Length: 158
Length: 158
DNA sequence: CTTAAATATTTCAAGCTTGAATTATATGTC
DNA sequence: GACATATAATTCAAGCTTGAAATATTTAAG
Image 1 (cartoon, rainbow over the protein chains, first blue to last red):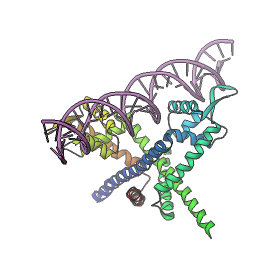
Image 2 (cartoon, rainbow over the protein chains, first blue to last red):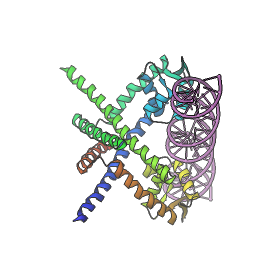
Image 3 (cartoon, helix red, strand yellow):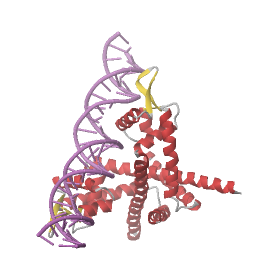
Image 4 (tube, rainbow over the protein chains, first blue to last red):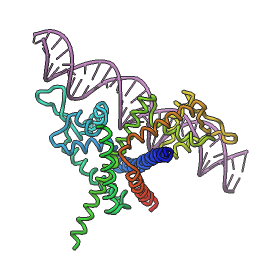
């Protein structure tokens, strides 16, 4: 009886594909909405918010390479975004004594202030966008996602 | 007893935020891996795959505006991607009798052939990437996502 | 010290993405 | 028919993103 087993395996493959498409759709819907609000309400963008968020959590500053590692984006990418933030007086590069290759990037006072506002709005937006989910929904979904992430990392290691 | 209720509400807000960050992280990890494989194995990109996928499902062709509506991206975006596909002989624009504003975009024979290969590989990749999830995991996660999507659409309508 | 290898960042070309402005065509109203 | 409005695409500028190549600096080996 190999046929039924083969059939189930093909079915599972299709179901995994459907799951991925649904995950992507939901994620993209939320992300698009956040991008839209950042642009409309603050004339900003998600990448800038992400960089400022990383910097806000590291008061002592981060090296460029640390930012790109945390956000999982390329180095060259971060260069451009930090350039813009620096131009606007939201972040600055400070030299590292003893290593002239690297700099530490920090939020300025103005940068922290601006980010504070964005972060509060961001949490409120997510709370509103996900308002259809109650405590049980959120907990259940979080557990599933933890399981998924564990499976993804397991794959990477294997 | 308003304090406890307020506390729970703030907690729920934080939990929704954490949920969103986890959802985004998992989604981005899978998406990045698919992008990487499309580039390495086929010298292609996700947007091109998405457009070809939409066209493959519509043998009679799609108008530019129909493609952008289905993929939820801007019109101008599709123009560039279809231009590239057309240059490479994978898609073509055919005039619509009676409406000289629009064209129908269709995959060529070569386009269908190429997409066939990409689609098979794509399903296999997802099956591999999600191999840590068994039938119960996939079903459970799918149900949660259906619920989430319903909540998102409910929000949009409300 | 000198060379080689590693590390940190920037620059660059190519492609994706958006929203706004533009062009072209179609449709409805008088 | 003439006009306003709606629809379909394209063009454009600005910004994001990547991977590869180039620069600069540090570290390790000899």
